[in-house]
Image 1 (tube, one colour):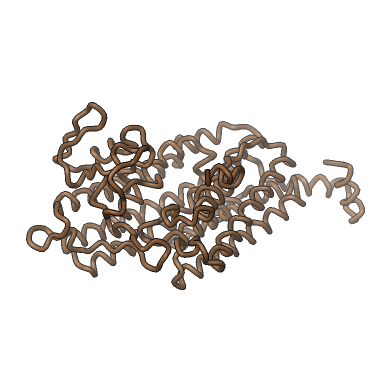
Image 2: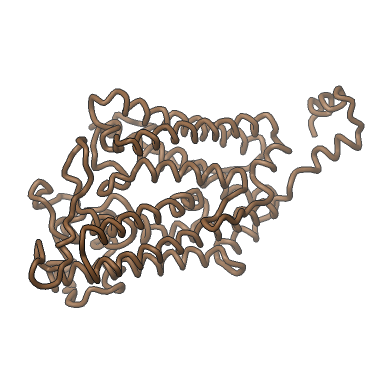
Length: 424
């Protein structure tokens, strides 16, 4: 306890015993970590639940591919995004999570790997030799020197094709592969409208559009089933004997909080403010939006930010209404670094408010790819305000951990740190 705080508390008429009690109110780091892990288990559990609901809607759609059943599958996909995006604050501070994340939420993806694309997509890419591979149209192809038998499209095949040829944009499975299969390409640029894949792309026999409807259906089903499997594996990381929970519980003292603040800081700054938001705003490029086929990006960004706030405050409300809460990073910081904690809590509120304004605009009809479009002063401003709030939030996180004596490394981004490199 510093002399400044002793003097302040004494000035308020508190005894030495009361002063000791004020600082004893700090929760033990191990209890903060337990809450953090319990909330992770709940968030990933809800992600599994909504992925299973999506899988059921995919089954219904494939059994009867109509505009109505396709719309229901799309709604289920959007609903499934909300709980998963809230988990992303766990990604950067926990290696076991990051190791699995690529199978679930890798982005961006070169959709020509999977299925037919518009002529405007181009024929080749200097970075990706499999840019137009089209697995759905080709039951046999080569990856490097290896001939791949893709006559049967199943979960094993899709998992083997993720990052084919060591190219990160070869995303064969996960949320965004399913998104592409449900919506198709968004060919509207920064104008209104999302992808518009017809339900007839899945009609078996007469009436099939764009050929290979049987293989396309097999691909969508395999991707949907694999998403459930991969999310279930992520949920298990946080169970009573889960790898991620065990790794955290081994850490001693305040150092146990480093993964929590690393995740919050890196998602706030390098990943969300930088790669997912500022890059697209600099380039005014509609391809630089996270949910680019469905125009759901405003929701994905919002739920990322909501999830970070829930982790900081140690409280999450599950889909069934159950509240999971306990000793939080906020409570620990309030006891150990009260001034910095108060400022950071206000910064979380400010970021969430700006994200809500962006979400409201998106829900009202201005899609995120329109917001970042060149010449859209209103949309650009909304996005920049969220970026500014995320950067300020990161600085607040850094101020708290500095006062706590916890060491973290926050992931950076050229879009924020060296924007001139982005436009070269």
